[in-house]
Image 1 (cartoon, rainbow, N blue to C red):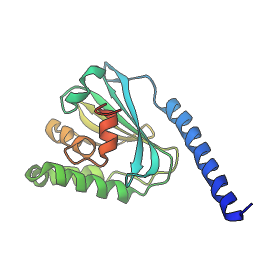
Image 2 (tube, one colour; image 1 turned 120 degrees about the horizontal axis):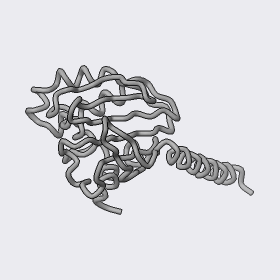
Image 3 (cartoon, one colour; image 1 turned 30 degrees about the horizontal axis):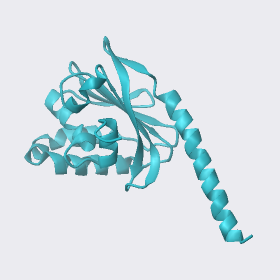
Length: 187
């Protein structure tokens, strides 16, 4: 048997096994329900998180009070977006990606709110496999960024806080596939 062929086969099996393990871990880290203030949110959707459309980096989940209102993602109702990572990612990647997608999606509004976005983004930290970020929108307090349950930053202005969701749900999101799956626009 050709050694390179065998190495490729073994590598493929190990990658498949690690994806199965990460799926099991993501189910444990994506509870069926969460609370924001006194509002109970349900797990409405999950999707694979990929970089450059093909590299698996983790999984994401979207929580809403009413899963029938996925199409109204920019409403002022409570919501939570969780990203569970299976690989290490430097904080710079989060800052740069969110900055670029906000700029693309918000046009002139971006320039008006740039200072708020920069202050918020400066709180991203380097992550390692197994870490998770939560973005929690509460109409009373704004948008909260958490890493592994630790509060890092808040955008209190309701309009700016909701606008931040354009990174994932705007007309030109970070990942069209992620957006479509989380909002159940496609199977």
